[in-house]
Structure formats: structure tokens, C-alpha cells
Image (cartoon, rainbow, N blue to C red; front, side, top):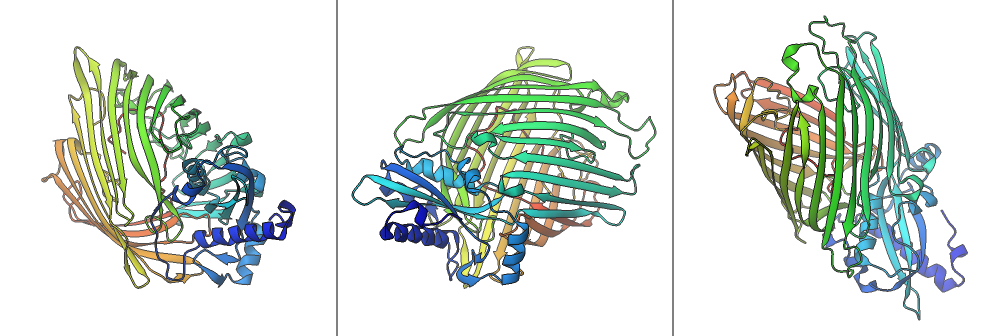
Length: 579
């Protein structure tokens, strides 16, 4: 942590900065009543709009402070253990994630975007930017306060003792915004029984705001297009559009992927294949020099995709499946968008600050795609709308439709309509409850090349319907989550109950009915100070599966990560309908 005195020449200067630090601590932490305040992310900076940024300083909140109660001290042994193993994010690394600069005029929305961008890093729990006016001038000082998460974590999963997955990672090695991850698999059904994967990730390489990933996998955690155990080398470079005031965004991915017969299957059954993927895109943001309060933008992007099979499966029945054939295409997308954010709590997190997007995007996509030896022009229209109220009600609506054109008619026409609604947070003393309702309708018309609609674990947990093919699907989901006030060793708990209903119009199915149901209940837990994602234990009852039989399914997810922020725009893409 830097010394207060080295940046200020007067006692009053020191006092102002200390006051700013205390204000940041108060904003990052919840108050004694743990109330939730929903506010526009730029509101806190509006009164300073247009002032000159004199200097930017960086500080942090240590593990000795609890984010749930500023007056509460974390146990000394926890603080000592954390500080011994954890290296704080270096101030220079925080600065490499900034797109605000000294001597420029303060833009409230841009400042809020940068705060959110920092908060979205997996090694930072929360961030607040505090503005201090400089007496007698039109200048301000900017103090950026961050709170790290404990960056070292591990994973354990599979179905021990026959199949055990375990791993270890550090998401902030040496406090330099770099992640090193090692995962392994011990599976008695494999030969050799042991497999592993390695991943290296660097955030904001050389201050470019671009993220680099390098990896090798033997355990199906690479790109993994096919159904067999896949090995892979891959490299990815991605620069998201972090703000409407940023000019460029883009990405590049290259990988070599191949199947290995580690389960000693007969040659007649084992699918031997080998494929390369090269995927690149670049986008240009139009209108970044508009007035501060004008967030309307246009974004033009181009994408090149080449997924090339060096070896296809020998089995004839798989040769016409899209996943085992080359994918080649050019896409261009023009997007109109306006997006802002609300700051709130208890949507997916357990008390940390969360950023909820609202606004709209309208995109038009055009291009040329070759799949399964069929070459066709492609076009799509995409519309997204989000609404957020100060009371805490959040609504998202999505409509996307895309089609190919051949023989003077549209083919493989995909339509997807979806809506998600979060109720406002209900408080019962220190207990909090929020409900989620969602509906998604998908339709595939004039089917030629694409896969049919399916129903799987993303619609109903524990369900796999390989024998079900449909051209229409309606999925409904309802869920209620109760956030409890207590904690155990820093872990907070949230029991939940959910109902899933899926209706399908089947082309081929062994089911006697077109309705599928799933009733779920479980509990989620998370320690916001640790790098671990939310852990979820869930039991699902399915009255009738794809064969008309009832069953219970137990699920455990250890590193569930759900964030609302996302990106302002994404790479040009085809309309998706199957997860």
C-alpha cells in the first residue's frame, strides 16, 4: 500500500485522501442492516462531469477488513494465513487496466465503465473510484480502491473413486494479473488412467486491455467439438469492447484438436478425428467522441472462421454430421447499441457489488458460410433489450432470427425469442429473497443442414435426449433463492427451489408426450473473499424422462460463475439455438 504522505504536501491533503479511502471502504462493504441500494453506475460521478483529472492514485483494502461489516475484524489467523500465501495485486497491474488518464476531462460514464471493468476481473472482488475536488480549481483527484479475492483455489469433482477430477490454480500469480491452472483426471476407465491440462492466462497484456490464453489439454477441456476424449493445444487473444468510449475490439483463436482412444474401444466404434480451428475477428466502434451523456454507438465488425478436419471419422453415419465436417465462413455485423449499468447486490452474488446492464442492441449480420459441403449466403437480425428499475426489478428480452439462402429460398431458418425477469429483492429482517422467471422459444424451419432442436441438461438438469429431435421448443424456468444472513468460516448460504417445463414439437421421439418436467431444490454457497466460484448442490426429480421413466438426479457444481456484465458487443456470430 502506498504512503498517504508521499502524494500530498499538506495535512489537509492527507486528510482528504484518508476520507476518500474510508468512503471507498464503506461503499465496497455492506452496512450493518445489509440493505441494498440500486443506483445508476455513473450517478456518483455526475457532479464532477467535465472537470480535469489531476492525478490518479491506487490503493487497496486488505483481508483484515470484512466486506459484510466495516466494524468487524477478520480473525487474525485468517488474515495471517491469507497474507502469507496471497500476493496483493500490484498497483502497476491495476493501472494497466485503466482507460482513464490524467489531464483529460472527467466523463462520469467512462469512469463507471472502468470501475465495472476492474470489478469484473476474476482476481478482484470489488472496486470503487472516489473523486476528491481540488480546492480553488476545476480539477479533481481520482482514487481507485480495490479489494482482492484470495487468488489460490482448487477443484474436486467427477465420481470418486472410479473417476476423480482435481486441480489447483492461482488467478493472480505474483500479483501480476496472470492465471496458472493445472487440472488432472484419474479415471479407471482410461488407459492411461491419468490425464491433465495446463492453462496460462495474462490479463491486459502490456496494458493493451487484451487477454492472452495458452493451453494444453488431455482431458476434454479444450475446444472439444466431438464426442470422444479430446486432446488439444490452443492459443487465444481477446480484447473486449470495455467501454463505448473505446475504439477497437477483436479476438484471435488457433487450436489443434484430436481424439485419442484412451478407453480402448474397438476401431469400428471409436471415432478417430483431427481438426484445426482458426477464428479471428476485429471491430471498430463509431461515435466515441460524442458528448459525454450520449451513449448511442454504432459498431462494425468482421469475422473469419475456418474449422478444418484433417481426419474425419471412418464410420459412414457420422460423415454427414455438421460437427464432424469443415466449417468455413466470413461474417460482417453492424450493431446499434446503447447500454448502461445499475449497481446492486444479491442477484447472483452473496453481497458483493453486481452490475446489471440495461439498454438495447440491434444488429444486422451478413456473410457466407460453408458447412457439410454446402455453401450458402447467410443473414441474421438480432435485438436485445434490458430494463432495470431503482427498486431492483430487472428485465431482459432477446429476439434473434437467421437464415441461409439457396435455390431461391431461405433454408435452416432459426428463430429464438427469450425473456428473463428478476423480481426486486424482498427483505424479511436479515433474510433476502429474489425470484427469477425465464422463457425461451426456438424454432427451426426448412431444415437442410443444421442439427434439430434438442432438450438437454441446459433445459432440465440431468436430462439427455439423444433420441429426441424437434423443430419447435419452448423452455420455461422459475426459481426462487433465499439469501441467509449467517456464515460459516466466511461461507454464506442460499437455498433455492426451481421448476423447469419444456414443450417440444418432435420430428422423431420415443416419448408418448411432448412435455418434459423437472423439479429441483438445493443450496448454493460462496465465500466472496475466495477465488472459488459459487458451489451448488442440487437434487432434480424428473417425472418422465425421454423414455417415459421417472428418476432423481443429484448434481454438484463447484466452480459455478455467473456474472451479468458481459460485453457491450461481441464477435459476429450465427444465431444459436442449441447449447
